[in-house]
Image: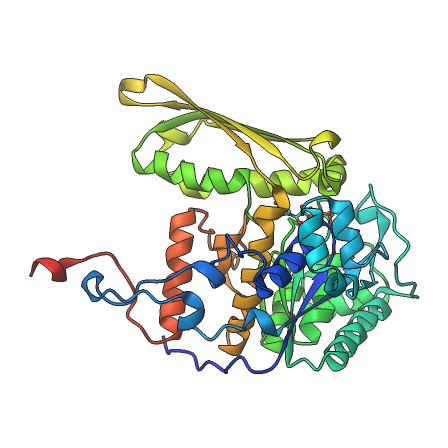
Length: 437
Ligand SMILES: NC(=O)c1ccc[n+]([C@@H]2O[C@H](COP(=O)([O-])OP(=O)(O)OC[C@H]3O[C@@H](n4cnc5c(N)ncnc54)[C@H](O)[C@@H]3O)[C@@H](O)[C@H]2O)c1
């Protein structure tokens, strides 16, 4: 496997967000606060983590951002689309995630970020109606309009390159159809406005045509499982990644499950429930949008526990996930897990987790890292699915026939080894024989 040639991160990088709600504005405000030295970008590997190089005795652990040429946070320019006309400051105030002090410290910069007109078909997000929506004859015309938005945004801001991270609402659950099976069929489908083509697919198509990488922060059917989109990513040599940010309860699940599996402890049942009161919670109150989330959340345990290899321990596990919309909590979600496990001779035990988290606070650093790492991938000449970024997703996309890695620690090892590989450093295998020879 030859080491890629990395182009340097020159000039400015545009970060385009389809969807500028709670997560989108918390990310933008946080990046601006970090850039201005007002607050720290906690939770971001690109800004805060190190990686070990060489042997443990060498004591070489540079910051990731010093080791690989990722774009500097000072060089980011933010933009996006939304179905509401609120600028990023107004949207952040409504989202009620950050304090007035924090928002006021970057008020002018946030107020200057106005969402472009969105592509929106109400049948894909049943609980929302907005006024900032493009009107067009057909879906191809809409895709062309998004391409034009991207070119204008690049020109007006003097940008070198752009990345896109979907921070829009969760669309209803859909299975791929004939129109998704190839690029030519998809383009024909855009011309005749095929009803199976969703707003997120229109954005992704436009981004990839403009060689803008696309990260999917929601469980939508957009790039993974859509051969047309993967074909386009290959054709334009553009990276894609997804799907559904791994933030609260699923993050905990992919921390705990590998631990239980490592000790060969059995699991009889795993019940997860959440209360959530932000707009995302309201959208997910619609059963069709919840179905997308449910599928994405349920998938994680299977590949970690591998019941087909250990039927005695995991075959009959009952896994259930609920999300309840409960407005009083806003963005401050509470997630409960009850895990029924069993040990030596089959004796039962229980684990209870009560995670009082903040949804957008957990998601914002993921948006930053994905923007910077996807740009790095692009400059390294990597295209198509970026599985090394599965660390960030609940439901990592993989080529057909390849199961995803959901174990957070395997995902982290994959991410850091990919960075080592990019820079021609030795990969870390943890064998460690050399210390005893
Ligand atoms: N916060 C988390 O921990 C987390 C974790 C995983 C995934 N997500 C996903 O991230 C997404 C954003 O979450 P949020 O809390 O910011 O939700 P939000 O409702 O606050 O923001 C979503 C925004 O997207 C806009 N939107 C919807 N459809 C659009 C379209 N077609 N074009 C442009 N804009 C559109 C909405 O108007 C809204 O402003 C959701 O899909 C959510 O499921 C969030």
